[in-house]
Amino acid sequence: MEKQATREAYGKALVELGKVHDNIVVLDADLSKSTKTADFAREFPDRFINAGIAEQDMIGMASGLAAAGKVVFASSFAMFAVGRAFEQVRNSVAYAHLDVKVCATHAGITVGEDGGSHQSVEDIALMRSVPDMRVIVPADGVSTRKAVFKLYETEGPAYLRLGRPSVPVIYDENVDFEVGKGIELRNGKDATLIACGIMVDKALQAAKILEKNGINVAVVDMHTIKPIDKELIVKKARETGAILTLEEHSIIGGLGSAVCEVVAENYLVPVLRLGINDIFGQSGKPDELMEYYGLSVDHIVQKVHELLKKK
Amino acid sequence: MKEINDSSVALVAEKARIMRRDIVTMLGEAGSGHTGGSLSAADIVACLYFWEMNIDPDKPRWEDRDRFVLSKGHAAPVLYAALAEKGFFPREELMGLRKLGSPLQGHPDRKKLAGVEASTGSLGQGISWSVGMGLAGKMDKKNFRVYALLGDGELQEGIVWEAAMAAAHYKLDNLVAFVDNNGLQIDGRVDEVMSPLPIPDKFRAFGWEVLEIDGHDCRQIMEALNQARTIKGKPTAVIARTIKGKGCSFMENRAEWHGTAPNKEQVEKALSELEA
View 1 (cartoon, each protein chain N blue to C red):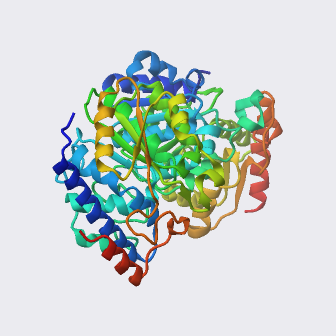
View 2: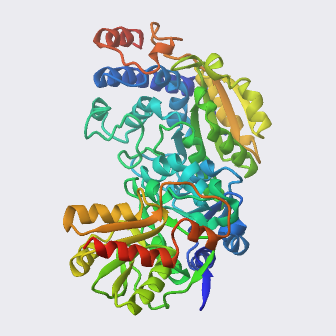
């Protein structure tokens, strides 16, 4: 199976966009080789600005550049772009409604060996709570590229959450990727798995295993956490009567919370949330960590069984 | 280089006087806000808007315009007074300061009011925006200049020094940062709360050209602005010694006037002191 890290696709998409649009400026904070903005820096050195290890100033400069007419993509690890510079993103980008796309890589526990200090499990929650901020968590390289293009085309602030490891390519180039519209990847009548990011592929794998046991689950790629696709959530709640959310993020404040909010207010069905259970990460290999923190395919299968008992 | 003569100095000083009257009046009407630091910055802001900057109130988003960023965003009244006097909006709107639905927010909001370049108020972020604007100017080979105004207490924010490093690193000679060095912050004297002194040495060490002036002497401010235009390859910091509450005797050099608005009686007293 073909694999690509979403950060790799991000770096390539920026170069593609940069060739067509000369108003794009890319910022990084000394992590360009890891975030892959180095691709853009090589191609367009005059439109790349390294802020040094100063994420707050990176976001502030991004605002100034955007206020002067640039479309700015600013990157660092999720921990720093969102955590360290939260208030700059809130006040200088979102409150000011500027065309700054905060594109953070190395989100979640699959950062791996660097450990808990670098494993952001709160960034979706933080970004989702900021008015005017769109939040996108693509599942693979193809949809990442589409997301980057869409973000360029649609004015205003946004947060794009990307990962470190290579992940299976799910889509082909013809996929219809719209910000705010979830993608139905698989139909099923017994329950719906609503996933984002790295968990989408795992949801598909779990669905295949469940099918062998006579359980048919639908799978939705909810790549846009905000604005959340209410219509699709309600539709799947009606059709399948139970929902499991899956995210490589805290179960507090992320996709699971967003789905629960929609279900609670619109069409009540049992919901379970699979994610990081309100604890910090630690060092380890990405796959070991996914297993340890309960985010493996086996865990999904078990969780679906638990969910079906609640129907 | 612009010519400085007695009449240009007098004109700007008169604008500063009108702005101070507007500041006191709008704050009195609002019933809350930051009086001391608005008054201390009035002469600097008057020199920028009525002598230095290339701006057009009819084209507030004209791309070649000079930019002013009020990094000490709590001094919003001094900015609003300048914008109204310059013709960006009708003077009557000043009376809406801090009221529901008014574009004159407690801290400047670029979405709501034409002429406001940066949404500031969270200290330190404005200088960072200014560096971004300066970078955009260099990138596009434009001749516009960027002027930032910081408080001296604001220098306690770490991002100020991140931005200072970046401005020098990227050789932004299109950027001038004024420090309104009135020596007072909410909790007391700046050097007692958390000393940023010596301020000139710090900016020099970060690679800036540093000018030290009397921030209430319009001629000195104008001369500094002229001199800054001659500095190439680095940004300029103008450390302006000022008096918090300048122009109203009962407010001068008193920290309690940082975040206090005058009552009716105090407005009248202030206005009588600010008569031509």
